[in-house]
Image (cartoon, rainbow, N blue to C red):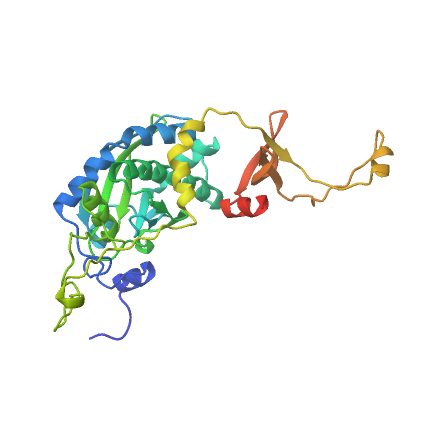
Length: 351
């Protein structure tokens, strides 16, 4: 007899935002086919070289990807194969093939990536480490999008801002019902191979597979066969235009204005990787009258507009890109990055 208390499975489902039962249920379009998973797997295998090179360049160490193996699964089956606590990076597609998309890795993999990026040992998975991991995954998705745009001709593919978190596996926001998972092998810094999972929601997987096979994908993620006559049936002349002629129904796909330029930048950034740029760290500023400047001499103290302990500004070619804290490395000053300024903030400062 049910006493009204929730079971652990029900609690886990509520925490993750999925429906009770996890392994079944609708939402996000029907299940992908074996042909879909094969098409996605073949495509992802072509990106392993660029992925390895890109992440190796970011971390300054050797990173090698292998695989992947792509398959259909569901929430319960997938969670059975991952540890109790994982690092997830949710980075949905918001243009081109919109829908759910994320990467999942073990805590050890996340720490290894953060250690290499920060040049530190035994790093903790705090907010700073999550930011580093999110940036790494963003680079991976950028490489993937560039290759996908070249294969399909879809120039509007764009990702959302990555959201990284180290959380219990029961709270990972996996897609409901059946979804597609790509399982990679990843070797970092010559260490033992580890596992990384990429999750595609049903609509994303179907749209990508359709586009890779040369079919036209609709904005909702399905395939739009030529001629959708009678799609809106319901009696009488439903699905027919004037004089009984079939209407010419075409799917409309609007580009995301906020991310269009980002996608193009990801495709061309490789051309600029060896260009030198001036990076400066600004402790603070102040404004003085000319007569005050002329009276300065040795021992003059200049008060700046920064409070003690406030982050310093990090500028590239005189444009603010980040903030950080001053540290001492051996006998030299350095700065530890604590915040990356968003593209929107940089654009607003430039206006």
